[in-house]
Image (cartoon, rainbow, N blue to C red; front, side):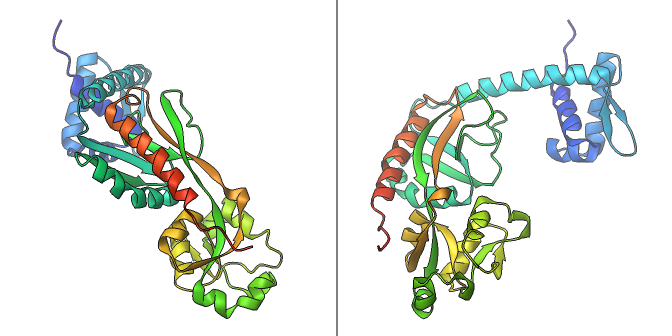
Length: 298
């Protein structure tokens, strides 16, 4: 059997996923001309067109769709082999963890203790609202608030996030009467921007009778923490984060926003020593961090 150009199948994957030769070339880290030549070579080897190149992009043909599906299976198999090769026999290497902003903040505050226990292991924290794709090796693990949408992952509950309405000490002292009387209409708020008005935290703010619309609005959750810390008004902050930052006064609990945090990874990595070490560490330290929090005044 004549040698098959396997690498050219990766070009097809990039073209179908990117939709255009330009996007595919960026994803494949090669010039558009090189990518086009390799696509031509693949079509010549297969004896037919795999994509129709139009003025608006590339559309897979029937042959292209069949080959694309097979190429994805090959990619998954190759990733499985790579995960096996990357499984360390000792606690060395790097673990890449994807989490949202609050979980990332909490994770980073805990990780110095992990480094003291396992100095040979590095950690990369990758922050995003939407979860990364572990099957494509975009990360090794996810910190998320519930089960993933795939059965390929295994996970454990490692902690919990709890939220409350906070102000900085100076603002709380200055607006003490209004806060004590829950006169929300007399107070200023820090919140998320317009595209995020349906996030749970924003809906919770709107349950406060007469509360003003946030005058300071951010497109990222930790920006709310920054605004509250600077004295911009009241805002919803994760409680352990608030304790870590210091200088904030808890005004009102928001138990409806509490969620369990789960650490997920691919099944093939779940029992590896480095992932076990991370999982055990987070279970222990996250629990201790929550238990050690100052409780709100009655």
